[in-house]
Length: 586
Image 1 (cartoon, rainbow, N blue to C red):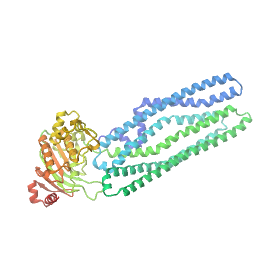
Image 2: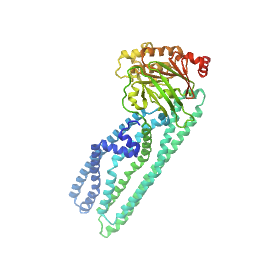
Image 3: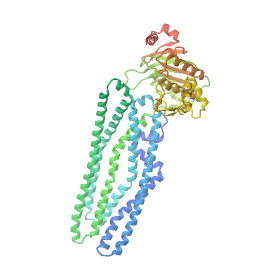
Image 4: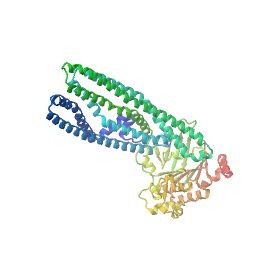
């Protein structure tokens, strides 16, 4: 299994939200201590207010002592100021803590995603990965912030207010108890009702994202076939489902406020009516009643402080579970550490390699045994769904083998760390996209220290240097995905990027599909001249561009059916002849 950070192992095993809180406490102990201290000061100041107010009423207003009222009033102002400063500090520290936890989580999500195999990536899909890396992470950030901001405040103010209210009047304590019980039950019912709706809401967001991405990526096909209305209906259906769920969640959240207010008002009325009789019998003062109702309000406020947690927690928990799925799915075999590869050209050998995708009716690759001689070109030819791409993806371990093994230079790839393996193996596919930036930025992804001469040499090898000189050279702007270049130019730039790394094994998966036969042959010749000792394994449907390969393997339904040179296969392989005839016919 891949090397997984200790926190990631715990996150996979335990409750995701709980683990994030543990990680936050462990990594930011001073900040957490500051939050706790600031909240204690702020809540102590808040709890002192009703008692001070009671003193003003009983010893100042009733007694007519204006000086006493002024002195206690100034004290109350000082206490309020101290509480306000402490509250600001607590919120600021909680916000910083949540931001740091979010940054760390996004970083771990990104690293895990980049190490996913093709099977894992397809099993999750781009829309849900985007949602989990953005919306779900933001929900977790909200949960961490709310919990950090109220972890001490809510229980402190609730318990403190209950104790101090009983101190003011033991006889009115049943009112406090009844209000507290009703609010606790209300919060529990709220959480139980909201949790399943939150999980459904996250899945509905995924469906809308998927529908939107499908429309954007296939907009040309949709317009050509006039399917705008049908596709629009699919989006409307997904959008309507999301809207309905959002309304239900909003209705549940909106209902909580009025019910809480009703319970609070009933408690206040009950306390006032009960206290009126006690005051009439001189068993309670007006100041005591004022303090008691103040503490009753603080009890309610303390319990309501749990509301943000109850509101955010269900959705954040659902988001954290989805994040845990990504972290768990990306926890894939990475092999061991560095490996010593021989200095001679590296032979690549497939030993009874089988790749079986989940839920597939048959293996994509079935018991393939093939030796690719070091420093030579091996072509893998086959029709659509013959298994070419899957077989080639096992060399760099983009796809893991289900059975069998792949050896590079005699070393099993599953016993080598991915970093060490991919330092000698480069994989270029037909749909490799460029990143936004410049040509130099894209090429230096392979080697950030490469000089301009090295970059120009790689561009010349793939026959694209002259095109760039006519533009702005290495400073030519590349738009997102390289859309300001043709398909063939994008493929040649991807090949140039691989050449910059100077790999010892170069895997080309349909990397010439957007080029005509003459251009593909010239580019392959340039690659061979630039990397004469590199082992090249190339898959293509265009046989003509690889007819001069040292060895050609013919795949059919995931199995190697024939191996030989172009001349041998034309004479002896019926499958190869059919593929050749089909190409000539087109």
